[in-house]
Image 1: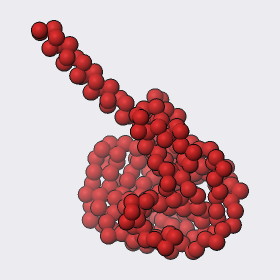
Image 2 (image 1 turned 120 degrees about the horizontal axis):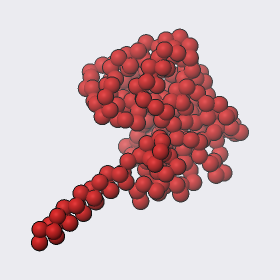
Image 3 (image 1 turned 180 degrees about the horizontal axis):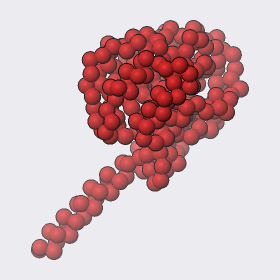
Length: 245
């Protein structure tokens, strides 16, 4: 009976460890993007999906797209270093209007280098501003960043960001988000997915044509905070149309 109890204990520990290992994903080694669809059954979309993000944006067609009314100011709820990115969760935030529906910003985060490519070109930083509407549909506004003048809002984010993985800094601050956005609001639009597991599809992607600026030092500090590259490679277009304004 003692042996049976020992065996069950070992089996339980093994199952727990297997479940933990199964759920782990990253950007390298066994947890790398090409393996995400095999790590858990409910992440199969990462492997089988036909409308996945990111993509290489090229050969866009002119569309009857409205001018994008951009967000400007938001209040921070907290900043999280989740081991995959630096994520700023927002509250009482501005939003955008898409197809006559109001989308509210929930959070934004950083990727280095960029996930989406513009005509084959990669950028040092890509920011994702994640929005939802009242039905729960997601819309992501993606903004590329290149080296230039220092950005005061990026300085604030770097200074407020936790250094340890899974650390959370609860902060009552206001951010001037317009300083993170390009002055030219022309954009590309396509239907895609989350760029991390579970890679759910049906996400509206708005990718700004013009990049914004931050200093080389700020790009390096963000890269250091992120600890490693955190970009999923471009996915097949599979006949999707990319529309541009």
